[in-house]
Length: 97
Image 1 (cartoon, helix red, strand yellow):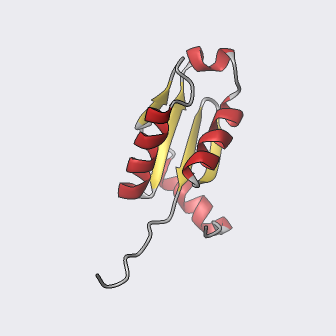
Image 2: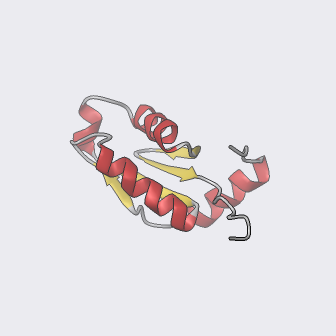
């Protein structure tokens, strides 16, 4: 897994700060469906913004949910702000197939 540089982290925060979240985590917590959807979006766009709804926060904090999803998708956690977080995963280059 490639490490994000400070410049890359800053650029991602700037570009995606105003974007709307594309995935919402609700009372189902971190289900297999949520993880698969985030993986699919990371594969397509490299960056995903996730919003954690209040119903999910009864059992865990946003940062804990973000860390678990980051670990399960093997993506880097760029930022946690409020109930929203940004994940980044570099696309794999396919070797001349």
